[in-house]
Image (cartoon, rainbow, N blue to C red; front, side, top):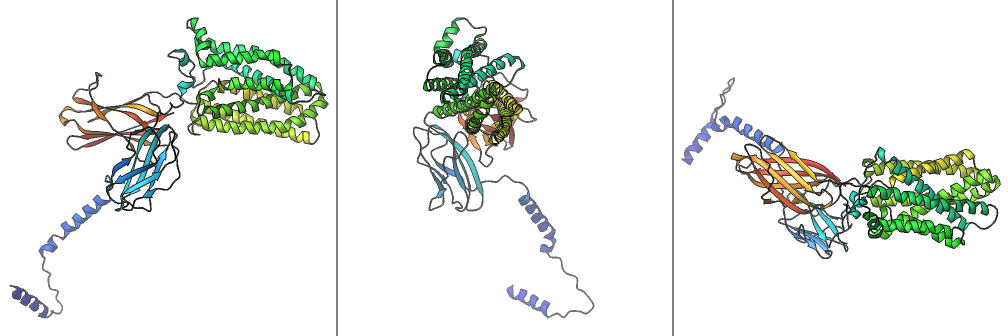
Length: 568
């Protein structure tokens, strides 16, 4: 048989070509199948180029600590083991705190077999932490995911409800003030008057305590004493208006409860005591006046927003320093205006001294204000999405204008000119506007109120409901309801994945859902419902989040739903 084939090939090679004629080629089976082969290759190429779900070839098979772990103390390191080797040149492993900030800048370490990544950790305080990794397997496939673990018993995050004074009295249904209302005008006006009197009287007392006897000191003493006498009236009005708002419609017995059993009530009592103590200390020696003034500001600081934040010493130090700077600037400006109207030459001498101190006060105001903003707000974007942030921007603009007016006044003083009356009045007007804004600013919550999340989506072959309660960063209860056609066989699996838009590079956090029997009477004709739930700190930090719900049918189908929401 082989010899026969060789002979045929030999004859074909030996046969001479005939000039002027082309011998018709014989169509073989392979030639006949060529179009089908090309079509097959084209289909394969199109399939390769079309979007396909990427199946990660490397998968995490071991974690230290485990996802969702509750640890008594900080782990020394994070380790994640994979089922195959990884590329060592690229890849990240991060641990984020409850404000989504990395807890360390240490480099990622790879094991010798390239199947384990590790990250050394500093000592972590109590809190909720997010582990986020993004690696590439040896065959070039990317793998990204995230999970959370808890160290100790984390303190509750500061929320809008923490600024609601009704909670301390056990009142419900009031809510924290997170936005402005036209009906609150009188309330805010009283607060503005209170802050004007507080900063002016304390500032005048500080200037008096630091001013030696001589020309102008008698006028300064009279001005300060007048302010100290008026201050208790402003404090009384301020406290009364707030108590009336808190206890309106409540029994009289709550008045005693307010001032004896609540933190804010005790702080108001101390504030009133210091205000009335000014009658006795208003004409005391300089050091005693300074001590009284600083104690009064400390009492006010303990009743403000800063008292809700941790660490308390840091928050209160910033707040009290901010108040001191405000008082020095306001008190000095009030006295300068009084001098300008009564003793022009003395106004020029005091202006030379005041301007340098005023610049330091404005610098301290700016520094403490920035640090307080970073402490109070999870992100600077909150300046644009909250009433508190809008008021802060207005206040900042007014302070910049006041600084500009102060610069012009200082330039005139350096040229040995009397302070310009127009600039003085303009600076004083800006100061009043700033204190009016502060009167509103200190009443509004820095944070919007978080609320439970409930989203429902309808569809031809799938209805879903996602519920998250209480809907705030940290521990939440997740409930997922899925409706599929009765003849579909139900769901073979349901996944809930959470993506952070604030940290878009992070992989999803998977919420471990479990089946349960819900008792709500919710139904759709022709559909059967399945209920799933989970609980845990799977929303570890504030920001914009996207929840992706993936429902796998018993027949192999896959349907997805997406919901977005913001946590404050």
